[in-house]
Image 1 (cartoon, chains in turn purple, green):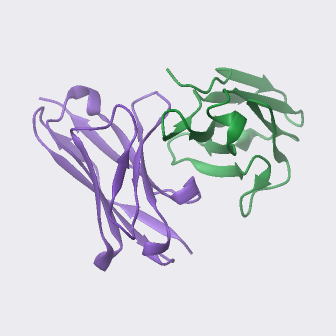
Image 2 (cartoon, chains in turn blue, green):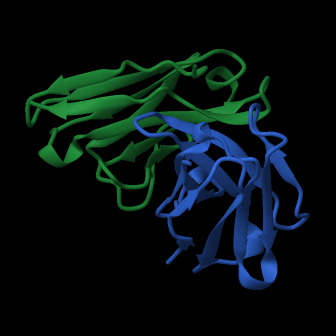
Image 3 (tube, one colour):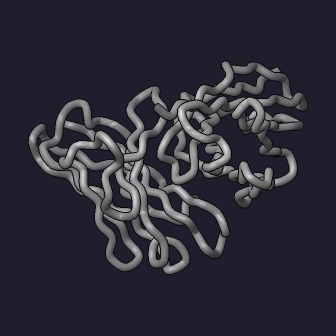
Amino acid sequence: QVQLVQSGSELKKPGASVTVSCKASGYTFTDYAMNWVRQAPGQGLEYMGWINPKTGNPMYAPGFTGRFVISLDTSVSTAYLQISSLEAEDSAVYYCTRKHCDSWGQGTLVIVSS
Amino acid sequence: QSVLTQPPSVSAAPGQKVTISCSGSSSNIGNNYVSWYQQLPGTAPKRLIYDNNKRSSGIPDRFSGSKSGTSGTLGITGLQAGDEADYYCGTWDNSLNSYVFGSGTKVTVL
């Protein structure tokens, strides 16, 4: 069965960087794009962008350019979300989800606090 | 501020039916398929409906989806306590060139 397993919670200081990973199994990794979704505390879902696993080209939603980088390593069937220059407003749960959002990772909590 | 508008909350007694609307525009719902997601408290979202009205694997037929013009609707019949959750619609937006989610609706079973 399809599984997306994300890395554990992170506590970072403002200005630092964080990388969240999402390891896929149960399907051919290169057959499906991977999306990233953010959910701030008590808020709704925000689509951040996606990456084409065949080309490695990421596409970002409005508001998620500049400090956000989506990448992948097909050799280990893993997608990554890197956020640099962290701000308190980046505190959220980050989800990876397969193309068409049919499968979701368990979420990774990122807390940005001094 | 989401481009897809949902009512903040709906409620009904066990066994009853609720419907959740998702209002968009021609740049999103009007020309693309709608999906619906359920997020139980403290868990990751789960896709219930895709392509407007197709149920994802394992989803009971108490859940249904429809689309008309620039609006989509999720229906839940035979409401159960376990259906208490947040529900989100989602679709592609051609103007934003991005997927978009609705604002979310909290379902309460009275």
